[in-house]
Image (cartoon, rainbow, N blue to C red; front, side, top):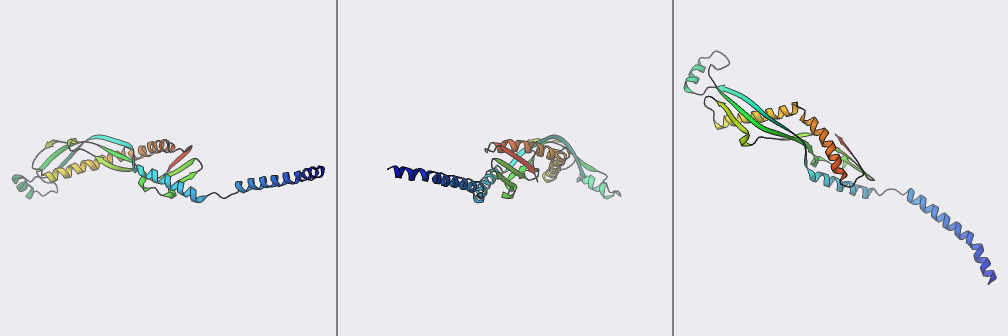
Length: 208
């Protein structure tokens, strides 16, 4: 019995050394183990899918009441006669129309254009490169058009053409007033806060 105790006691240092070596080997294995890129790709793909569901993200709007004047050669009988003898580029007799248009322009980011190359997920940090801000639509309801002055004869098609010019002016005025820049600045801030609700500790949003 005493001999067995002696043999077991002499074996203890060897057993402790083996356990220590195994522990050290395990530590370095897990520390230097390659990351599972497949899992990372899946996670990124899921994030891209969720972001693309947002689609058009409106971050700024522009409102304006504008007055648009337009004219054309008179189509009345007397007007046609007078304009026939005109030697100038401008008709002698014109029909006039003045339209007041009240509308708004919506701008933001089309997140449906995102690809996996635009999204990076590393630990709890999300980095997203979003497309440039763009104009989504110019909205003028039918009640938003008011014919202030109408002289001469104007067909429905001609009035519609003038209304289309007004909508084009709204778009141009919005861009001139810096709508896209405002949409970019506000959009980056809003999207950063929104993406944090996905559970990421830090979010970095940049514009392409």
